[in-house]
Structures are given as C-alpha cells and as structure tokens.
Image (cartoon, rainbow, N blue to C red):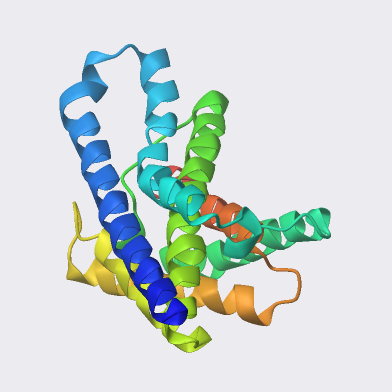
Length: 225
C-alpha cells in the first residue's frame, strides 16, 4: 500500500513538474513577444537571463514538496573542479565536432542561430545567458524528469529515453520536428555523458550545455558574418 502511494506521488510530481515547466516555457515566449522590446537594453539583458527561471519554478516547488534534495537530481560537491573541467572540455569538443567542422564543411545554413556579434561585452552576455539556459534545461530534464522516470521505471535506459523525448518536444515551440529530433538526440548524448564518464555530474552537463550553445553564436558570428 505504501509503495503504491509513493508511486502515485512520483507520477503526480512528474506530471505536475513537466506541465509546470511547459507553462514556464509559454511564459518565456509571452515575455519575448509582449515585453522584451519595450525594455531598455540593460533591463532586457537582466530579465532575459532571469526569466529562464520560469522553466524551473514548478519543478523546484515539486522538489521541495516531495522533500527531494538537489543531490537526488545529480548535484554533488565531490571533485567540483573536475566536474567543471569536464563540462568545459566536453562542451568545447562537442562544439568543434558538431558545429564548427560542419560549418566549415558548408553546413552553416543549417546550424546558424542567426546571432551576429562583434563586441566583447555581447559575447560575455551571451555566455552568461546560455549558462542560464543550461541550468534551467538540465535541471528540469536531466535532473528532475530523469530522476522521476528512473524511480517509476527502475531503469536508467527508460529515464534516458523519456527525458530526452520530452526535452526534444520542448523545442517544438518556435521550432519544427527536425529540431525536436535533433535536440532529443542531444538529450540522449547528455545522459550518456553523465552515465558513462566518471565525475560527469549534472553540474558538468549545465556547463557543457551552456558552452555548446554559446559557441554556436561564436562560430555563427565569425564564419557566417
């Protein structure tokens, strides 16, 4: 009986958390459409990064209500320097293999994110912004959803598949099915890093995700200008 109650709680937490994250995504879209351009440049820079927190808001509430800990979702203080170093190394290597080389080979039109910068402060802001993107998306999908699915199924593989599919469909808003498929594949890749590479934690994934996205802007600005 107690086991069944716990399963119901996990199911409820998973469903509420995911729906809440999607509601947060819609909130971010509404902010970009209705509010963003009415703000000064400085305010846009601050709020555009902070607004990413909407994606995490409901999952964090569910985490607190469920009495889960951050360590349950993959955060750890052990060997923090190695975790950070792995994030930087893997994110940079991924960018070179999956973005830079294909762009140099002529696939720039497919990979170009449309951002064009030339000032150092612009790149600095992009770096901070994409770290916020990495934090919000990795916490929700490779942290919260991954852990909930693993508890319910008892299988790491199921957690990888479900969290990656849901991660892909998150990108349907403002994207297309090709982007959904590609981001789902990235989700599987991120999960694989965490499972197979020693000391690769959720912190590592947050950093590598941010760096990977940030370097798309760098390569687009340099090669596609």
